[in-house]
Image 1: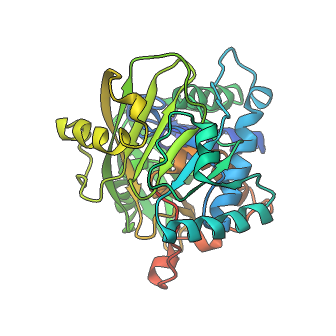
Image 2: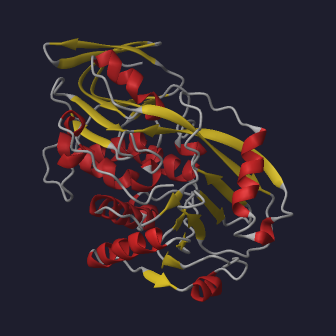
Length: 382
């Protein structure tokens, strides 16, 4: 392993690998990724992998719009033998209360002002898009045809390949155990395979971000939270869009090979880094999804797993460098939507480090917002 690098990135998920790729593309040399297992072994490979434009904050809409554009052209940006399986057949977001309908109307006004193609649908119009949808109690729905689903392993792999082609080194099965800081700057990273001196350190450690920050002497206001998912046997294609309900708190998508992937947000979920699965999840998932999509009642579950969300108090990421340690950069706290905004975040992080102008002003996502009490709450999170 090298003993010196210009940039060290901790974490080989899609955030870390895409940051490395864009840094190298912008001319930065001598970049190293430290990954405790292998690319996509953590949150990236365990996520639901949906991507959507339909957010309630301008910042999230812009990050998602730019990221989806990058995913659409990824095969041109980084030609490989791998198809990331971008199924771009929309998100259908359901509303069962006046409160959510009003929020969706506000969201649509914002999204349309940003050039996003989105519609407010009646229950019957929603059923035309998903014929097996039970519309009892449904008041309205929103639909964006350019939303969709991507294979997270393959997207992560393509960015890793692209980074390596540009000279980035990826050290797998290597764990960071400490960080050396001198006079307000990171000077070296200590790993299980040796010490690497560095000029820049980027924290892309996903659910372990707070532990990395602590090594630098910074307390991140984040915690990790288990989220469980299941996948079913493959069946014939019957559902184009991702179906999502904020009130029921679930999402359900049929992927290109025919299986359904689904999960839900549980406010009582386990905090910490335990990714064990529970039988209770299967029962709760059935109770949530079957009333809405009754055709799934007899479908067989193949397996279930759990991943980790790295949560912030406002469910918004923490991006940029820190006041305390100037060459320490954060790309953390994505609160469950890191995969879908990874390309935009990666480009912005790379531009910050290379002093290029930013396409999206992300100062509001800096760490200091928590000290200053400037939290930014996203109304459309599952």
